[in-house]
Image (cartoon, rainbow, N blue to C red; front, side, top):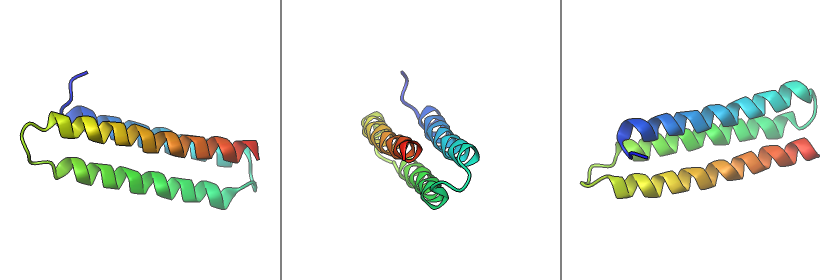
Length: 92
């Protein structure tokens, strides 16, 4: 997969949208159940998005691809952690 600025920004936005969608669906399907925790996960997802986009925009070194690769790995790791937290909320 080509690592460039456009694709990594799209991937960051896509993962954030999926996290937000899952949290909203949890809240819709489970009214009154762990709403505060779901809102906290939404805030974490938004913070993660802002942090990752800020880091992507601040890369000025050439070549940038190794930085993108490292950022992508961190993005996937943190997003997986948030998805696991959403799953744990649904199990409670």
